Amino acid sequence: MRTYSVTPNVDASAWFVKLEDVVPEDVYDTKSEAIEVAEQLAKENTPSIVEILDKDHHVIEERRFKGL
Image: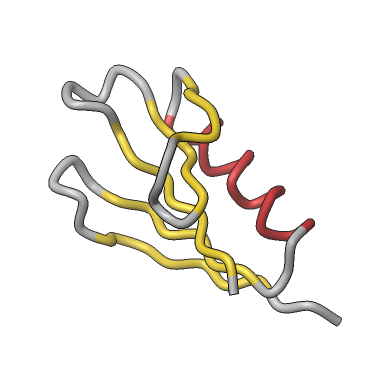
């Protein structure tokens, strides 16, 4: 199962979408935009999880996507 994380940068002025919490896939201006992209990636690569993290890298929300 793949895990995509949505994480803010140090001052939350940008948001990263990462696969397996390694190198950032892309950087987005808003949290909602980053979540939307992460969810789309997760839907295309099921089964997957999207974890939304706070500035301290604690998971504040988790969304699961299952295949058919």
